Image (cartoon, rainbow, N blue to C red; front, side, top):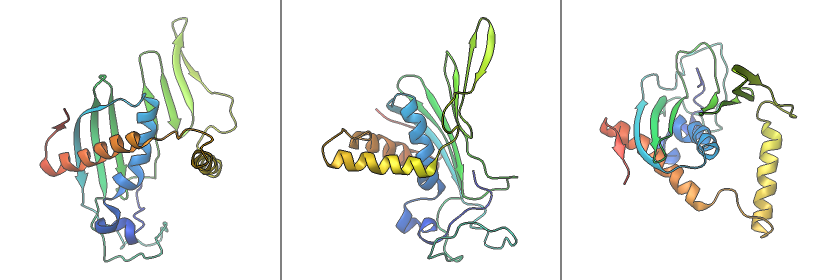
Length: 200
């Protein structure tokens, strides 16, 4: 969730980007959760998108990242999106993402809750469970409790090269991308229709 962070340029031009924060930022958060949930198949989606604040180019004294082709006159994407996604296995996923909203600060949060415990991936890795009738907050002893962008992207590129060389299987087959696009398009479609949509 960004309080002021519409990069402008192609990010804010729906003809080139296909959408706003949902397709730019939200897809990554949904993909992480969906993968950790075991990649269930989507059953229904109730989504909303809002275009109320624009790019807030009038704001002074607070800098933010701007694309090389930033143009404050062009903004045809949503400011914010949220959705409730239901899966065939009974699980559900709530997502909220924004380029700009009246918030005190930017936030990133990825949390999963299950019958035997919970997992907070961001902003800091933590496992929550219970043992001996006591709730436990567990902090794993790992190199980094938050996402290491530099190492993460390096690992991603290294794996991609190995997959291209036929030395390993891809972690993200085309079927995964198809299911994620179904979810993204479903959120936009649900918002446009103003109702929940179902998949057979």
